[in-house]
Image 1: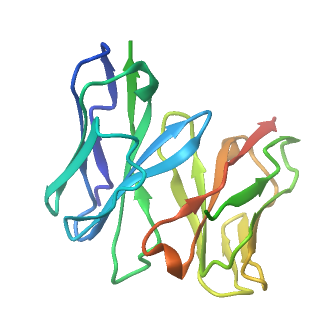
Image 2 (image 1 turned 180 degrees about the horizontal axis):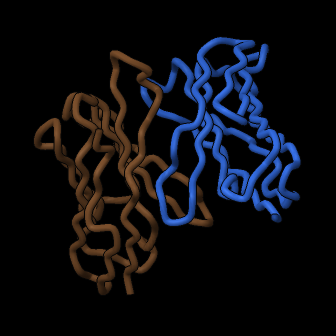
Length: 115
Length: 112
């Protein structure tokens, strides 16, 4: 079975550019989470969706960050404009409410570097 | 807000040794999870615990859900080089509605 798929795996961009990260959750999962990981702050939850609806976006750093989930099999995290301090690894994770719904399964991550 | 304290922060051990790490919380959790992260990869779920006092094994790994519901332990027996990585605990409480709180991680290095 395919796990959580993220693209791109690596992204290098210049400050001020728009960045879009993509995620395909595990089929059948109804929760989707976006995390950011840095050495200084560890794993931070940015936002999560249930049945494509954003439930909690209190972790989104600022208005430059936005996330969408247009359907059950796709989500995007957009940063516009990007800044060097956004450099981090961004993970997408998914889980399902009818099973072990706290068991989140992570994608391989997107390593973002903003110069 | 809720926080998890994970210890030790790092460990450097000899192959074949047993390893123990733990996580504590200031509040009660109803789920404890343990993840392992290899370099350049996402965290991988190792063990999930749902009941106070529960003891669950996954191969050489054993985890326990503390009786107080405020702590959890992960033990690795007879460590091997591929056990190297960062181990994270994560907890969920009923007040968090879907969110997991993650510990800071324990970095494990194994000397062959």
